[in-house]
Length: 263
Ligand SMILES: Cc1cc2nc3c(=O)[nH]c(=O)nc-3n(C[C@H](O)[C@H](O)[C@H](O)COP(=O)(O)O)c2cc1C
Image 1: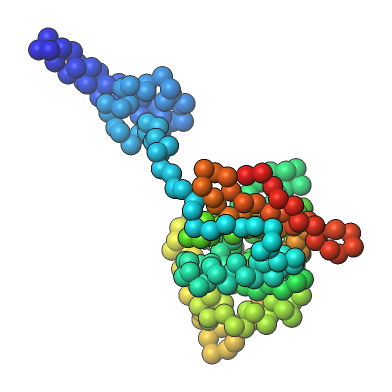
Image 2 (image 1 turned 120 degrees about the vertical axis):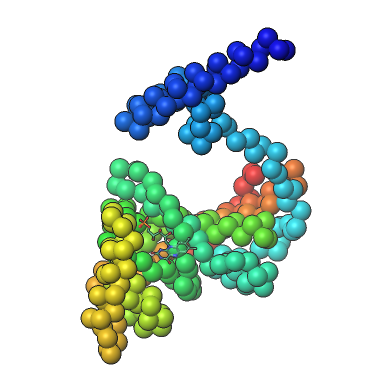
C-alpha cells in the first residue's frame, strides 16, 4: 500500500504535465481524447467526461389507458380532448411542440415551436420565414409535430405538410402579440450567426426607435405556417413498456382509418 503511493503521485504529475500539453493540442483541434483518456481524468475532469450512466432512471407509466372504444373517430376531436386535459393538468407550455423538418437531401432538424391555433384544416405556428426551418420547409414541406405531455405520460405525433398561411392571417395574429415580441421579430435574423448579444440588443433599440409612436408593422419575413395532417398517433404510456398506441391515417375518401400499433 505504502509502496504504491509514490507511483500514484508520479502518475498524477505526469498526468498534469502531459495533460497541459494535451490540452494545448486539443485547443488546436487535435482529436486526442481517446489516447489520453486516463491522463485527462487526472488533469481536468471537465475536459474529458466519462460516460454518465443514467440507465437506472426509469418511470413506470401507470396513469391511464387508451382503448379503441374510447377513441374519438375524428382525430382532431381526440386531439382537442387530450389538449384540454393537458391544460387542466397544468402542464407547462402544453402548446409547445417539437417540429421536425428535413432538407431536400434528407438532412433533419428539430426545434420547439408554439401551436397557436388549430381546427380541422390544420395546426398553425408562427416563425421567421428566413429561418432554418423555413428554408427546409420550402425545400421539403413534409414535417412532423410532436407533443410530449410527460405529466400525463402521453405523446401525440402528427405527420403532414406545412405551408405558409395568408399574410392577412399572419397580420391578424401579429397584431395580438405584445409589442416587445413584435419588435423582437423585427430584430432577429433567426438562425443566422451573430457575434454578440450586444448586437442583438442594439438592433432591438434601433427598431424600437424606428417604430416609436406607431404600430409595429408585420415584417415581410415573418408569419404563420399551417401543418395539414395526414396521420396522427396517440400514445399512452403503460406498465412494462406495453404502451397503447393508435394511428389515424387519412384515407382518399377523407375518412380516417384507426389502427393499433405495437409499442
Ligand atoms: C418552448 C419553446 C417555444 C418556442 N416557440 C417558438 C415559436 O413559436 N416560433 C419560433 O420561431 N421559435 C420558437 N422557439 C425557438 C425555436 O425552438 C428555435 O430556436 C427557433 O425557431 C430557430 O429554429 P431554426 O433555426 O431551426 O429555424 C421556441 C423555443 C422553445 C423552447
